[in-house]
Image (tube, rainbow, N blue to C red; front, side, top):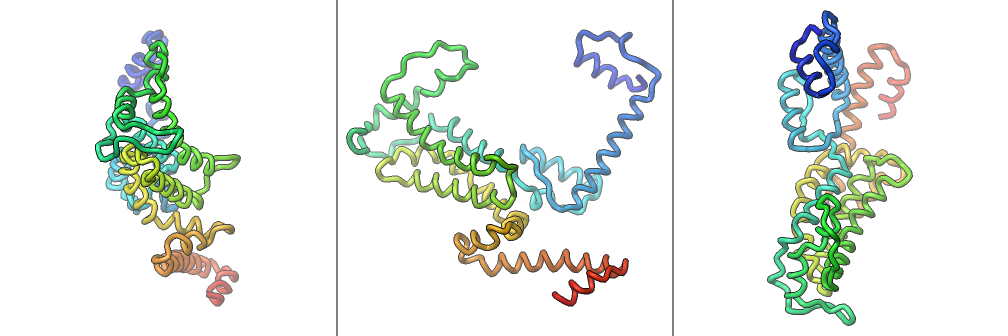
Length: 290
């Protein structure tokens, strides 16, 4: 190979290879660089669409900002990023699973619930801190110990709390590819369910259990709510249109409709200019209709 760094990388990744196994005096390095340039040209074309979707938000926001600066992309990498719905749901769930052991139950009464399920604060806190999920973790290679009744009560509460994100996941992925039009309504429904559970007076333990997961919901909700792509996706869907906005965003109906009108008018104006330049008769008809 003409590039010694790539040669060293291949030898590092494949320990069973020797330097003599690698063909030298080839144009491999040049072909790789050419493929890299073609990839960035394709990326430039795709970003002209106006939106993109990526996971690992913080790292990718930084990466897209650098690409924007180096390659002069005309796009806001933060405002136009479409969040991966399943990734967001997973983050909320992971905050619940990883943070429930540190939940603060100090504000609860000594006992709560109704017969036959009455929970005692001290026993419940002890069971939570002992982490009843851990014995089921196959990566620890531990022998499954017998769980006590209060451990099962905690597991039952976690199972109930996870039903909301499981329903959201099923709604978005069941028997079809997830559609952008359903992302915001599904996410908001999921958040409403968690918030309602966390405010339960009969089962006050859900407040501390869900606190960590709910603490991170607003960051993604504000970003999704501010991105016009979600609203336009709902507007373009024949079974949604403005129904969700009118039902849930009563104070924002006028601003949302104005945003849709502005977006449609902007793209339609660009199309008319382009079509008139090439003498498309249908474009003039659209102009007259508008």
